[in-house]
Image (cartoon, rainbow, N blue to C red):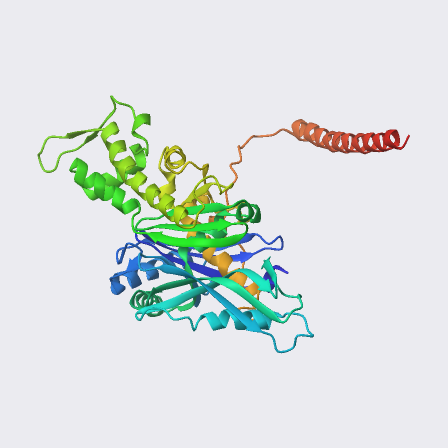
Length: 457
């Protein structure tokens, strides 16, 4: 079964880093990571590719690192994430009157309904990135999650349409192509991150995914299993670093380091009498920086980002306690200390950190479980969704490639020199252990039967 599945590669072109991850689902439907590479990103600002040459260099470097982690890989097509403040979304409605009303509704008719939405009028200079059906209706029946197999005269749906700036999309495609790759599909980054950090029950409960990246904060809101809203907020971790740089008069690299090591999103939690000493430039005296001041700056910018989140939730009427799943924070910026408390305080909703381990096979290296890679792992999952629903052409022959050792978690084995007697004892103990286990198991079953009999009496 395993080698029947395609290897799908996610390419996350971010403001601070570019990551390439290759994955394949194992027989349990979990993702095994077969290749992983990253590189620092220079050509991207606020989630948009501005300098194509710099971006190509970074993509090639991330790819080289991916090949270095697994020389057996061959990568030709990638799923690419897209963000940036130019992303907009709108709601539309579409219906078709069916030709053959005697038959059940088929996937082809649903595809037709979706294709029709690509003809929706949108402003010149924009382009449709994705059309996502929300709830369907068949004749007078509403809120149908999947109408395939239903019978009826008319089938329709509400749609969430995501659009982006043609130029921005062209720049991404060009950078990917000039790196020797094909773009299999462009996926909105918050939707990719949502796929990585959420299970079905989160969708049902209602949840807002807040992915805090370097240049943007991406938002996706789900309610009753349906995507209700998407937005890209044009602030992220880089803005915080810039605020620190300007506010405290330090270098950009120092600002970044302080944020990661000593930063907190709540100034109340910061120690009043703690200071960070920064060496002075070229003979200048060293600088003393208050940890409290650092937290004040971070809190101000983070509160602003969270105010935007609340504004977007209000727009779709889901702000006051409607989302039982609360807010799931992910992306590199979600690792800031005390961010959960600040988020709960500003939004009034419960918050937690979303790690992309929900769908990963066990035994991967720690690095991959960081929220930083949610988007990239989500892109692979989006690719699998296409593959499983026959939305795109995939090759039929796949090479069998194993997970390389450098991407497997290394178990720390304590070396002990065992004597012959110790080994014998161990064997006896093990056998006894198994016996004990089965003994307990058997007793458990006997107890069960006893209970059954008691009920029967």
